[in-house]
Length: 233
Image 1 (cartoon, one colour):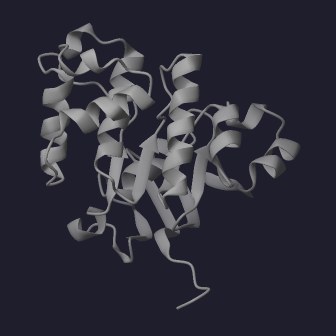
Image 2 (tube, one colour):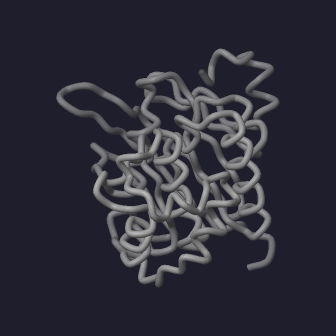
């Protein structure tokens, strides 16, 4: 229906905890199609837990989570998204090309070295990384190659857990530029971050978690006015 936005991800009064510790407490929000939303907060606030809940990697204690209009625990709900975990590390014995081919196979997508080299170039990686063994990679190279894999899937919804972790300033700028370009094609971004400058460059909306609860949900400018720099660290 015209004028009605599509919700790709929805949390409705979600609680989660482990070993007697409460991590998320009554979290509710929606991520709309075409939007770019950052999830911020101090370490231990529940950001990674929230993303894992969205992908059915862990189960909530209570509440409802829907993904692409389906219950999040239905495999079909995840077929239009790609996920980059925090601290992505490639198996040390694989080359970059072998890793990408394996990951794309899981999405039912054929590997193209030409397409992979183009994405590497956009992110500031030399295409020689496709022939190198992962044991030779820096932390930033692992992270960038994981993002290359996500982008090569051409999925409409990217869920990224600390995608800028380990990147040097030049690589960070390249990644932001590439993600901005992806947004112009209709890709929806939902990612966690500790980098205020990244949030300001990429997002129209920020969700701040504090002690497992949503303390703020609005624009980056409004968050900056309420919590100058310190809340997103």
